[in-house]
Amino acid sequence: MSELATRLERALRDAGPRTVISGAFGSVDGHALRQLSVDFARRSASMGIGPGDAVACIARPGPRMFALLAALMARGATVVLGDPRVGADVLAAPLAAAGVAHIVAEPALWRLNRLAPRRARRMERRVASGTAARWSLGSGSLTGAMPFRPLTTGPVAPSAPGAELVIFTSGSVDAPRGVVHTTASLSAGVDAVIGLIDPRPGAAVAGNQFFVLLPALCAGASVMLLTGDAGRDVALLQRLRPEVTYLTPPALQRVLAAGGSGARMYGRVFTGSTPVSAHLLRAAKA
Image (cartoon, rainbow, N blue to C red; front, side):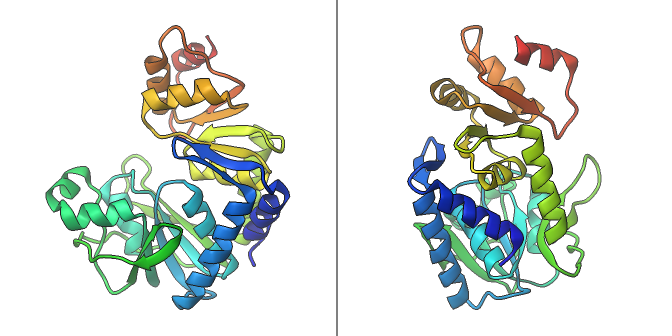
């Protein structure tokens, strides 16, 4: 089992009946998320996923996605992560990555590509066709998924000994490139984020980015998933009052605008991933 999977499993075991993920969907406790990860590991084994296999996972942060990540890493697979909220070029790259044998995507993505191809083109949510086995992430299990429409494939992911996670980034102008994380780099990254946000066990950490939420879970924090809809997120932040919030600058700007003069931010607020203006920082502090 990978170090990251071990850390996450330990945190969920320690959390027990305490809520570890909450959001507009409701909440999930440590027991339930740990059991879901065990179920996914068994299902992954029955699908033939084993050590060294590359699996593309296309889904937004959520209980099933975190459980799947832990399960695949525990199986020794290399996870090629893709976010359906990004543009088509970045989304296609994980699916064109060298050696990907399985593709797991959230059900909404499969339905969109099967039932509304024109809308899928407009929304840039198509996925690449190929020979990989396709699976749907939903209803607590992995089931066979519908065929999907083709998309021109992007550059392949680089390979590296001991690769655990591959994340694609396009920067601002370049074609998507795969960033390969090994056990050592993942552990260092998780420790760096934990050191920055310093969440205490059980503290609420709000956001919708994997690179913040996964370390928070490993540290024993309770993750609050934001939706990306500014109005709904303002309501969640006002109701749950997280101790730590991470938003990208555009998301923070939208939340501040949607909240108006009567809304408040609670705890510590972090922003980054793109340039941050002094004006935005002053608005958030106010």
